[in-house]
Image (tube, rainbow over all chains, first blue to last red; front, side, top):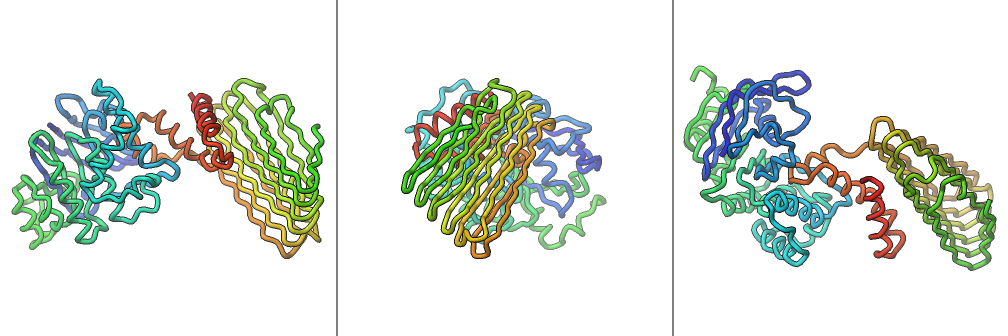
Length: 248
Length: 217
């Protein structure tokens, strides 16, 4: 699914990623944990193609193709989805028009005909139910005036609409109360299957009680310093990041 | 110069779509209880590289209302200037102006908004808003709101901003698979949306949205 080899990236001349190696197979869920400033969000931004970052070394193969050579929208149509830590408000652009443009861009990429209005609204209804997203929110401008929890649910709703192969959830748990966290996690779990994969980026172990990872990676100072099973997150909960230096 | 008097109690709707060669020059006087609505659409493609619009409006009778809604897309080497001169000479008048421009390439736009409230024009309510978006580094927009308020019991406000397309919104939309050109089109449609809805005619709004998309194609 995804193969990251020796990935280095900078922002404004400062190196943030210093040689990331990661293999993600179909059906797997990987958690990436680490202290603030370790490069977690940079990794997700680089994979999504955020133009603020520059890749200086390394390669990323996504479903057999060179990911880094694709424009951000092509990466998305190929099945890469980023759930933003801070979803962007877009006043005046309705959720419906936004999602229709996104879904039909992907369908065109796959050689499928565009959905007509009826089919599209039916799809919206079905997917909305998955994250208990209010119909009124779907009628509003993208993320405008949404609460923190509604924004995160809206991200998972969009993920459900686009059915990506690889979903990267960037700090999806931040700013969520326990009920919203449960709804979001259940949505993610329902969407997970043998053919797709999920990367969960989080600072805290809490989310991993709900989305159980197959692998946990610890990112520190731009490198993955440890990899283990789900028990690594629990260990981390007890020892803290300070106890998990490179020497281990 | 087009000279018009809107008589007592009359309603007039003026739609201006041709601005090249200084053809849109209007002097309008409003008598009591009259309502003037102006829609200004600067969407002509090559039409005239230059054009100046003048809307010189004076309320000479009480309880008159003036509404000016405008939008423009300036591309290539176009140079379009819009000057509104709205004068409240008597009490109890209302005016609202909302003008939005998107400027691309090496085009130059200008908006000068003169709003005058005479000393005895008490209880005037006047608003003026000008928002502009620059779509390329060589595009320019000059905006100059000019309020002269000589009465003390009035409600007046104005705002003028010039900015760029929101890059974070653009990336967000791209991450969902939307091509940047389509994303820009959606963002500009949103930008102009509140001007278009003042037409209260969905069919005309749709036609103008398509024309806006064409102008940016």
